[in-house]
Length: 517
Image 1 (cartoon, one colour):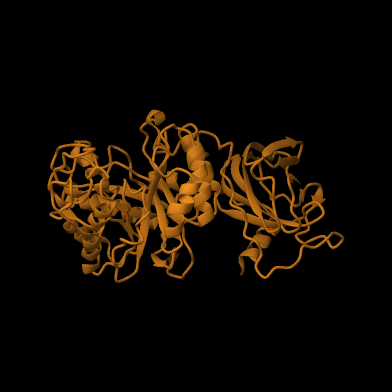
Image 2 (cartoon, one colour):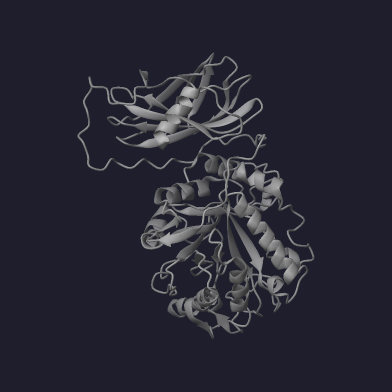
């Protein structure tokens, strides 16, 4: 059964099933034209639900719009909405466009969302109207028809919601629909599933595996990594979790737990995520090697902080171990090194040398220990027979990808993704910079924004960034799914039940629930 037929069948059924993803495609027409509407229940719980409505303009351009519909049941109502100005009088609901999504050209789409309440049943609305015209799903024959095109214009990127859902996420009676996470590989400039379908990694970072073991805090900083904590992630529509790791703890060089105990804990969490439809990204975050140079985070030779580059002494051994642990499971991705900064270690005096250091390693100016370059880490993984997708960083804490293509390591499987990080305090923070520095890389290989965030506890910067990334069909994982308080910024949750932090967490959660993967 095709997706369209399945959606129409769902509409005919009338009643939405609790805790399931239910969508109904209903016909619509814009004033003097035509449009299509898809009404989707993202999640439902006793007495409440969260829904999205996708609007596509099929006719001539409109500069502003108002969508109206009637709830079939008198107890159904909108309690909070975003991406439109929402109102309700009796059963009639109105959603008026905002400044950033009012203009819809031919073929353009936008998505709006809301939280609602219900009692007894929660049936699908039977009819929609746009700008007062009843939905028909076809262009009105009495009005001018746009000239045909061989390729319809692409939908517009849906901007992030301006009003997020409530601070406390609604409970779900059962976890969202799942299944195991897909095996992934690189095809051209896209990540794809085994069936060849494009797939975006949209999710969060789950920090603490990089520091808790070396700071006497146990394995996961006392936070849960159980089914309930994963269900909380699934309620946000999280499809990828980046897990920072510690080299010393994996290899048993220092820290507690370390060695086999640490390895088993990482394997168990990664396997739990995969079983729940979430792709783990294993990131090497803290590494061995004494560094006391420019912008040193710590003088300790042990892996107690972020070093400018991985060490030739231990990091290939680390990746050999990780690759052996997960080879054969291509749902797991390997992020070879968190945020290199050999350019800073050399006071940014020779960027060519810094890019060579990143790829080739060896003796790098300003770094006291022999460095493992990205090529040696690719080689270490592939020598085990592992075929997992590899994420390779750039310079300047991987905010700089300007020479990434020229210094890309060779992979016999051509299974490499460019790793990029973007915060509001980085250098490359404008659409112009992203268009000139990141887009050319994304045109040739997949780019994944492994860390995004802003230190203000707001979400205006990540809103702009996610809009740009969505437009390029690129993935991103926000920092961080840890309840550390948002006073320092970049903290998504108040607790491991998934309560979002004010503004930053609320904005990110709302976006994940509205965006198309």
